[in-house]
Image: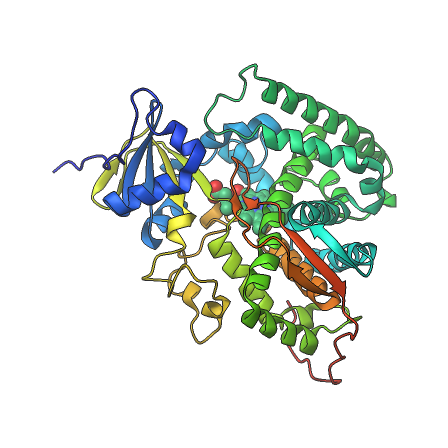
Length: 457
Ligand code: HEM
């Protein structure tokens, strides 16, 4: 018997379908679909049919069928308008050519260096805050994460040369994120996007030219990209270098900033768990102590809090594919030409996999409960399968470092009590949140020599 297409969620308007509600309150729309129809249902965005699939087995199929019957490149055309044909925005053969050299930028010995840079940058930020005061955490963390990305990926000198202008231009790019409208319409936000991209390229061009001319003078992430040979032994061309840099820094900064800020906010909202984190910092990484790989892997409570934020407050909720060949999901057939989505806002809160799923409860990831290990595709804040986030370890390490150093240096208090999720069409993040801070009078004591015998990361 031929299977039918998934049932349509209620509330579709003539012509627009669910498009307006999708822009306004996507989680509410998806939740309604789940309540009405379960794990597989349909939305209509104007004349585009969209299937939403939920549950670890469906999530697994979504990720594992990508590059087969599901295509990742087409739905992200709005990103291609910003970064050109880089990584999954490129045709599959070109993606396979680029993938190894991007992965190499994040291998272990490089990561050890980035973690050191992260600590220097975060420490400098903390020193600049003085002894007490108030900050708006969300924007502060965005700037901090930009500093980290700039220092890790471009190196301190280049990062200083490009200055704030460069990062402000990213804001123009972000404003133009729009998966619904054709990215080349002559709208002001798209015109601004193209101008910003041109200016950013102009800033990077002489830097890349200088480094190509004097390769012996440099040894860092930027130089690694610039001098990279592909399998055929050819240097990657200058435009691709620029696009890769811009794309990686984009992929890495707003996403990480949102989840880093949420980690701090949720810890402050949960003082019992925060106490476990403070005890851990005192034990493993007290004031003045450099967090080396051995210490890093012992910051379990912070790592679980970071993972709980990935589950409850993921930055990238909207993961999409285009169906290239008819494909079955459960009892339904999703025809070629449909869009598909997975939904972290529901998939991460299924009670069959996560006990009391609405609660902030990082201990669910402790070895005795290990809820994330029940199914490989139960938690997918960093995606899954071949396109799983290349920067996942970088982002997790960065969030752990920011949390550890901030809490060991300062006593913090939430002034804003009702932070909400700000969802745009790009990464989600907390709404403006004021925190009050006071430098700790008594630094955490140093641990006994030999108390730390962990494994290196
Ligand atoms: C909390 C921070 C981050 C989150 C939540 C996140 C999330 C994701 C997700 C969900 C995907 C898969 C997209 C899909 O399947 O449609 C992805 C892919 C990717 N991310 Fe991240 N990301 C983060 C940080 C970073 C960082 C720091 C970098 C690098 C600097 C990065 C680089 C990438 C790249 C290159 C891909 C494409 C991988 C491929 O197609 O092979 N991300 N990310």
